[in-house]
Length: 228
Image: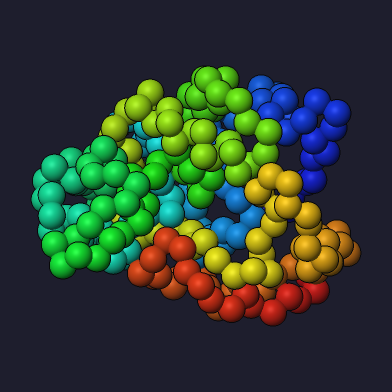
């Protein structure tokens, strides 16, 4: 899909986000950051319908799946307390187990992506639920939106959905990072990347298509940029 740049304008980032969400006609929204790459095609309407049926105040965490190494760790540790129900295409799980980080039996500390449901990493929400959440707290840029949003996780259902196989991966490579942190200047590389996008260049992600990554966030080389 193509993308449109929206100017924050004089009223700032929060106003722009809420104004954009209010103006949409869609029933569901998928907040996501720029370093996410889709590794499979997605039927958003199907997942939205499943969410409405199974956990309307929850979400569909499209970045999660059985292929992630942490899934096996949590399943071994919590069993059916972790996976509440399952179907051929979808799993419902309890996001309230442990916390954002937890220590495994062997002393390994894990960043728990299955706990972090209020993130900007491709979770499908009912639009009205998302607006309700965003009206609860102040934020001025994407970084503190996500940080503040963690505190309101309890207002959501603890039961969330995920596909059997994750549909996105987060590329944690410097060339795709932006200035989501406050008071950080935009690197020249990001400016150049935005200018290249506006000039018709697109990232070649074909090599990532169909890959079942073991982690939701990976350090990998960004594919070469190609002209569309």
